[in-house]
Length: 296
Image (cartoon, rainbow, N blue to C red):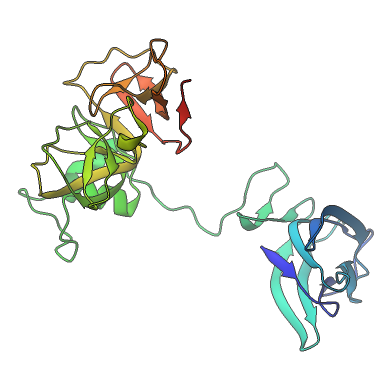
């Protein structure tokens, strides 16, 4: 987030040279925050070639101006070198400097950062990395050993760490995995919560004390042993054979460690928590909500 928190701070835009025919339109959206108010605002202007133009003014006293989005669109017939400047009492600082081709857009969004959108509406990248296919998994194991000896993790962890998108085999999980200690014997696919002892125990939607679900056991783990838990990603619970309705929501069950789609039988005191979506009859896209709804 870009924050202007003093009456001396503002944002300006300047071009490296004169435009060929048309100045570049600039828009910005922001929110002014005080101790008593939360006020959205916006501004639009155009560049002035090599003369810096203020497009987000400094906030009023005792106000923070949170800049949420910025757009600079090159409608000129020639490329333009655009510099965004941060101005304060300490001087002028360069935030970003880019070359925009004709009909390209420099776009900033809070939470995403800076991007260049090309004339076809696609996000430009500086390179095109090669992503291994789902059949490339075997290339990471040679005679049962990983070619990355410095990563003393299982292949499943290596997939997660490197961000590979691979086909989920029966009774395996792929995604963001963490190592935790089991509080009781767990089977693959068991939904778990973190108890006050710091260990992972089976969730049970019968009561709030055994909720909310934080993860799914990514393997069979014996009590008081450490193991891998899926906190986001896909789990193929083939052995459980749940026969889920594809596209339907999956919830924490009233049976310990269970996953269920039908919560119509939940009664007073039961906890409803969305854990993810069925992307196949026995595959969950696990992305739990931590909001619990108690039946009354």
